[in-house]
Length: 458
Image (cartoon, rainbow, N blue to C red; front, side, top):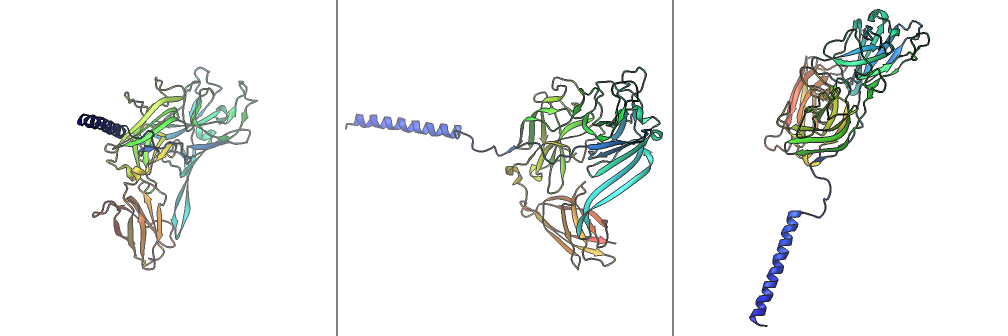
């Protein structure tokens, strides 16, 4: 073979080699032919099964006078500052009567029951506290899913005849509503029910009365305009991107009148809660949907929100900056709107939620340790129940008991801030309450710190 042939073969080989190199480079740039598994930072969103929405019932006396109505409310969400819950009565049969008020405030004797789960002695138990106010109540201010409210109203307390009205409804308001009118199609309130059926006739002789459960959603006198609330949404997407978390969705049902959608980060380990922000329209408009309960725009139909998003930034949220790995869940929920400041405690009315993906969660430091000793002026060290709650929470997260010397230990406790409580033996209430923080170890920030605390009980 002559030199010319060798050179030709060398050139061909070089060309093939260059082609192979080019193919390798192209493969490196394009990646695999198909995606294997979900992107690591994506959030799998779904409808939470542990959502708790406001509920209630109503009962009218069986006596012929029909002069007493009992309204029971439960699972009410925490209110923003400056807002209250109010119960109203409305009459559908006089809606078209000129100059006639068909709405009056419901006034009644209030019985408030609070159920608090906490350790008493060595065991965890439910402590039930009932407060019966003998005075007439016109509104409710404090509320959470552990409280039940019973309003006992009579003709005398209302200054009106209960039998002249047909529906009961609950609203969120700043200024208490007095007697007034409600037209047929305006949506009002977030819980409602009918206790009198007028049968469509002006005569009262054929009216029927009954109790029942309240419906969660927007009330309207025209039944076709009412909008019961349900968990909803399609094309659910969520992801963490650097210092931002984003959720997008379509087809959300409008929130009840007086309520809004909001996104929260929740930590099931410590009870910590951070509000990410309100629902907004898609980019580039990013218009607030704070008033999606009542407004009429191109972003909403009569029953739903066409498309929406939430964008939360770790460095600019209230209470921030935060680290996303300090939380276990992200949730879209509904909450009462308005007031002078956003809520500091999340509502239990969850609509859409998902777990923080493991690629983010694994950044969280491993658990620390808590050790301590109980000192008591009465010398009763043994069997003191020690329990931790999340800040602003009432349910125990971790529980232990002191030994005969008053010493106690919790061998695994997540990084975060808690409220430390101590219930001495033979007592049913905490005699010590104070904050405790488990931080990151100074020498190794990938693990939680170990701390020692002293509890002094008089």
